Length: 340
Image 1 (cartoon, rainbow, N blue to C red):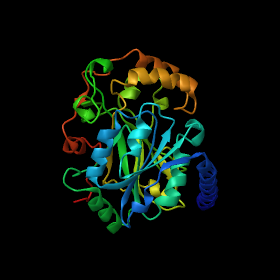
Image 2: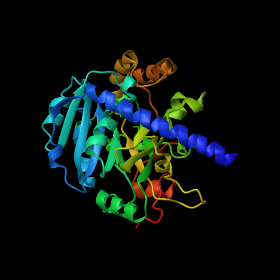
Image 3: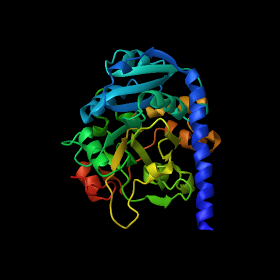
Image 4: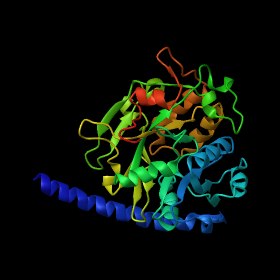
């Protein structure tokens, strides 16, 4: 019976993947090219894939950090920015840019657009799929660049690499910590919740469903199962037949979701330092509440946006101050496994 159930599930997921790929093919028509420099992409280059809207404040540090890690070229989709984001990205020599005014929500929160671009330009490349408020780190990232990590992953026959999204926040009200573009946001956002995570393994896609952190504590304390999902799989050796299912939380084929050890040991993993709680979130929350583009069931998140508009202090006596990746590894939030 188990074998039969597994066969049925595999069949359903195979068709789900095909539907997602076909959907992305159709949504490609919503993209308009602004500047296409993909002829610069060389064999073996590591790519970045990002959907943005009004992220001019974060982009200088975001690009600088991931360039230093080893991302050689970025595929950006701009969703109708009006703050200079499109113009800034157009001027970056390692960026190819498309724009669209269509619905972010109806494009599966940008994943349809990125899937279309990845199928065309990222096939055979390691690809780092991120949001502009996510900064990717991993054990020894300060001395061992991404090409070293991806080479190690290939030697160990791993096609994907998982990461925990770690919400970072300041001490005090969010608006009292001004941020200048280009600065390291984690000089201001230097606190996090380190010990309130819940983990379950989803039986269908076999990915880890992780919830917790400051958003679970401050915004969803009475309904913790509605808190945002914190487990992601941002780094993948891309194939045009692959598709993300839910943001970067899970993929198909589902073997790509096996970024954890299931034998009681540890497997190398990283962290996405999340800069969502910069001071700009106070004003942006009012806009996003009215746009209703960021959650599948926006009505459930009215109170969440209202709390952010009120400019909260997220710090508590249980907060932990961020020091380095070694601290996060010692706390068990990411792992070296047998990497290095």
